[in-house]
Length: 285
Image (cartoon, rainbow, N blue to C red; front, side, top):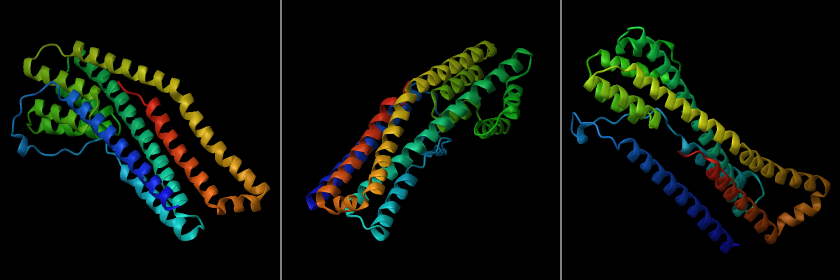
């Protein structure tokens, strides 16, 4: 029993550390790609203010719920510690996957809003309006979450901040390649001038192509996500039917060390399968 608990704890720790390392490495690669085109800094790096990112994640919430689940199971449900730990791990992993899905939906929504805002800016520029007027038009017609970002950009430029620094900070707050392309196009225009409407039209077309590719890939990987959910629900549905049909035998099975070990190991494998399936179906450019 103690050996299995230690083994389960090591597996859980390995999963958490591996997931943290993969996400940290992916985030570092994304930031290095976004910062590959350097803009001249106007102030030292040590005095540069820290910006609050628009794409905030709340990954701690999932693991807090998982920890609360472990405590509640140990306090109010007659199960062993190993089953409680694995159940809490599964709950935390499922909530983490839901939070990741909501974050991806938010990123897709703000990217779609950016393409619409660029179309409005192109129309304003082609009709003879200035870039400031085009940004104001995009701000007036935008909705959350893009509205707050454009509002800060327009407000800072209106109060006299350097436009290139403002656009660079926009790309830092929203770490998406679409915003990086958009901010670089505006920064280059403010530095060298020229006709901005054709450039923005090309940027908008590129963003719409990325969105279209993302939607196609998500539709093609939807089968794997549905299959994962179906297998997970089917497992517990069969377990519930067996419990209803013969509760005495199920209770006797779960009261033995072999039954508890088998249930814990099966739940642990489900956690690994959920993480593996979602990592394989996640979109990466």
